Length: 325
Image (cartoon, rainbow, N blue to C red; front, side, top):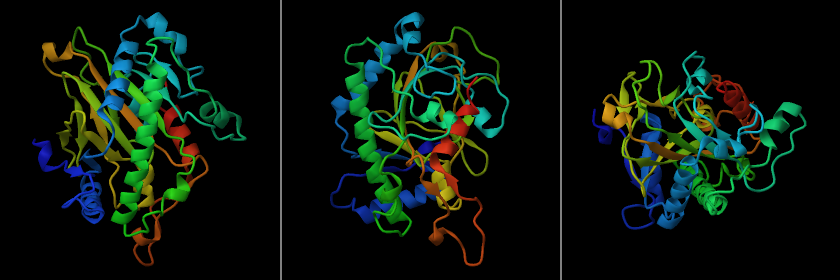
């Protein structure tokens, strides 16, 4: 199936033919149909993208003993290194599946963190980031990319507001101190075919407002499920970036916008299975205490919202805990 028919490419560069209004209109259509689109003209320097990608590749190339030196401090903490088969993303949707065939490294906000009063929340939200000794530029490269993604996410949230016929700054009070995460996902070569039900990343939807994804490697594998239940491949190489909305944006819009289920499949042929794959996923998440409730303009007259109000941080924590093995 041709993904170009379903996943539009949107140029964010402010120039003739790419006005804020036209960008917002294109985003509105994409978010109502699949929740996925590809962006160009985003302004992120190529050097920033390549430095983070290369640092992640060098980190994952190290022996497992070196990577485990910065392993997540506890199963309840999301930051640090997570070894192979320690997560099953499909469990966030209540599906009891085999572990995902990937390893990852994650960081949270580099600056001050929220200080939740609940002990479990504090373990999740306030744990410091962990940094490896090698490669030497790892921290600088990853933090630079995080800051770039944070700025791009704010731009996208402004476009989202315009697309929803809201004031451009509508979402800004909810993202003064976002608890967003950056995760490098490494999908190592596979010497043999895994069980049919085991994927590189199980079918799931993302938890926050939006995700910004950069892909790298010789093979693809990302697929989204459309409204008819069909799986559609999503392709895109740097400097283009893939954007999808998450559960909180779907809740904000009363499901007018789609938080699509997606997965990363294992290639069918032996040669492709033996190729590595890397992705950098920036998960944008509103402030810990931000209350997410249906936007009035997305609620038909005299109808009740589909979802009750929830708090951003607690929702994220519970979803994350459901996937950890």
